[in-house]
Image (cartoon, rainbow, N blue to C red):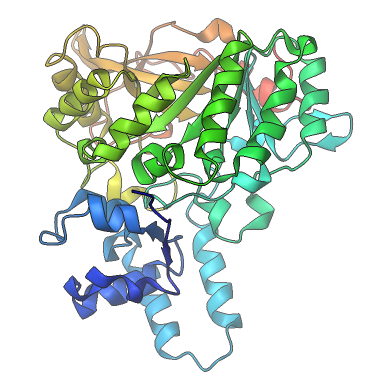
Length: 442
């Protein structure tokens, strides 16, 4: 049966039929928190994924609907007061909301340092952090079928245009790639590129199949669509065109990989998602899965083991467990680094080798993707053992390094070098690299 996408935002969420299940307090929380953090969901999430009889603990409801605890108390109280005093003049309310947003670290992990130049042109729709991979943010793909409440790219959807990564000019991307033959992978990201219609997506991808871009071996698409709108690949009016485009990429000899975001096993439970995965895989494309580790959502090792096993059953490849980025409502979702490692290892030991393609838990820091390998005691000193999975300088990758044990740390910037060292081994060079514009790799 064909499904028509119906979106719900802050302006019309009261039209959701199931909204009568919500208390007046929960409705108010959505209205207050949703003024600061973006809110959007759809009828597939509402009808097929949320357990409306257990909203207090339901992970999918928490993934989509703002909760009071997602704003600090002082921020919640300020927005609530301004809404109650609202006289029709939005200036004070909008100014305060903007101030709160700017205090929430809207572009974490030094993303501005990843934006390259083409001559004197700053390419605001491109990030180039690692030599072999370029991220491209097509302007038509800077929204999603539904918004995750933990999303580290929430400024893309919040009207914060000065902080938004986006670009329409595909020709600038192509010019940049002609100059940078070290690039093997192009990742279309957002937002969600799969919100775009097939013809727009094809206009961006098809030129990369030409012989002059033989150095581009893999085209990746970062997407939440399989979890939030699998009908994108089944019954949307251009679903068949999407599938033909995927087939075209694979016939060209390049790899096509969907970097699919699944945060909870329930997102893998419907008939539609299984059918969509099968249809994508029939084109020769890969589906690699990833998610942050989130308190209140998936902070039990049994959930991760179940999710990885189901992904492998469906033919997907478990890829990353991330640590929640230090932005937005992180305080609501964050976990201590040691707890993240314990959850990962307890889940990892429950699954077979086919699931152990997953890497984590890792943080996307300014310097690169840093994996927590464990907690150990060396000569009486308790330490974190860390390594780079990816680094701004590829020479840093896979070198173990050590940080003092800090039980409350939830992010790398809260750690100090172990054994009396003043700096981590990469810090001096990182500072030099980040000062270089355009970004140069050694």
